[in-house]
Length: 385
Image (cartoon, rainbow, N blue to C red):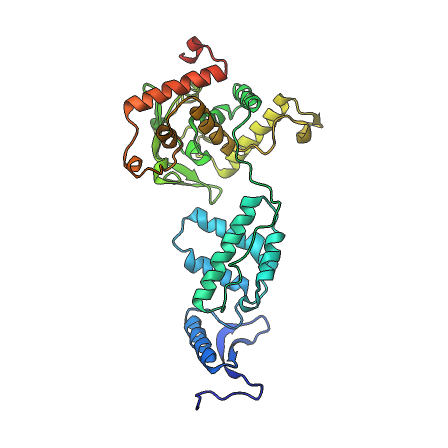
């Protein structure tokens, strides 16, 4: 059988060419394609030439090089938030460990070692595994590797589950007590009593509050892929919704909104501009510190010794949302209204096209008012001020 390429003395078919890319040594990068099986060699050669036209070299491409290319091509149309998520996984977890390796040299054992050494809770390690699978799956599709080494990766045993729980009764009352005097108190209890995500709460404007009907329109959110943040729609289509404004929150929110323009944000920096991610983090850090102090944590040189605090240091704004869902379920709110209020898409196809009627909304709001007033010991006359 005659071949267009001659077999070398080492038994390999081989073809190579220089690219325009200049290496650190000053030499041009050389693409080398070789294989003992002629059919495989021809396929590799075709793939190499096809990828070269796209700016990719099949033979020498490293995990770092392919990761950057994968992010630019395969994640070109994802949201900025998702792109930032994958970029962080590459930069912090993947490239430091295997970025120097050629894609074709990476084995399943390398990736499993990477996962085993990834710090964090189960959800964090799981996200790294997802990124690895997508990166190597795309490389297999492109012909950069012959087999995806990430398919059978397992999460290490004994990983701590990410905390997803409502606040305890004691923690709820600590939050409520601190909110009475803390500068970020109204921001925090708006999330707690309305089930808003952090970005949804920061995105609230005065014209989204109906004090007469006691309703809040959730129609936009601030997403922080940069410190300045971007105004977008809520997390999902179901996130666009109305939620009850409970009696317990009403007087605090009314006072907070005094003097604001209809289109101004409710929770802003001191100068009235939209809150940056740094600002929002400082609000929460300051509030959390005060919760530790109010709960009885020991202090040393004005620093909280969190190990001595009855108030958990793992608590984040998302815990408030879990607490809201738990509370309104305990109040007797039906599942359909509950999913609507927290912005979760219903599993019932018919519910996706059906809002909550005024009667259902008002009944649910009344249940929530009764439950919260009782839980926090608010007298009926006081809560209706």
